[in-house]
Image 1 (spheres, rainbow, N blue to C red):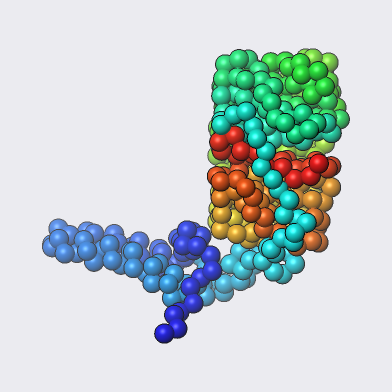
Image 2: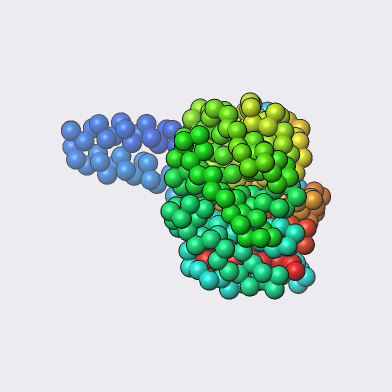
Length: 396
């Protein structure tokens, strides 16, 4: 017997889309109505559960896409304000991410001296760094042997470090995290300086972005309260502006700086923000029709950025327009871009990469056995990090 075609994406991704349709709204209303009738007879409880649970299951296994109607009542596959639908995979080449060729599948596992979860990484001209749980900072030697650079953070208080970035000249690695943790490290000498609790703020920093040369940096810090703190580091001293909330107060989860003027943020309410004055002010630039929750943002030039989401979709911003591209079903956790190359990583140890703006996306299985939470791309190498002290690398 030939079975009905099942949707090619998983049930979780299917159900996210279903909850935004009029069918889900109708099922919810029916659940409420029959639930109120349980005072007449308890049997209505069974009916209430059935009218809510059965429709999405039946639709999923039948392969139906809600009768061709999306949450806005328009034909599926249509666009809204220049944003294309994610119901089709719509990779920029018009196809799903390609399987890698032998040369591109070169991500390899590297031994590390920790089993702590690593949340972020940076690549410099002379090596790479990773930060994570309990304030650990790892550095790799030229022969790619990872060592502990700092065992418990810049202030020796073992607060988790969530984000890291490197100055434009590569001469300082900055990192930030829980309890207001903030510090920098000189890659050449190994010397580090603690700047924790900037402006007396001891909130948990979710990410940090840095631009400029060492000793002359612009710094952006974002937290779960929706605040961004902007600072200017000049010859050892940092002048901090008052924290601002560019959005509604939803948790800011990621930040990136193109240069000392232009930068981008994203929050967990599917909003992205742009600054053109080094963090003094921000404007919301989207996104209007995203289903997943945003997790990271990356950019290499003004007017061109991308954000990842936990539904396997990457959203690309290009001069005012947002284009969603489905890479897979796994949640995407981190994103990095460098000279046209883009790398995204996420759950199940999967990496997606693209060699240029017009190249196909490639789906790369890696030796990682768990989620990858941070990724960095440099001129000659790339690094992804995750749970259990996992580090996978590509390049020299």
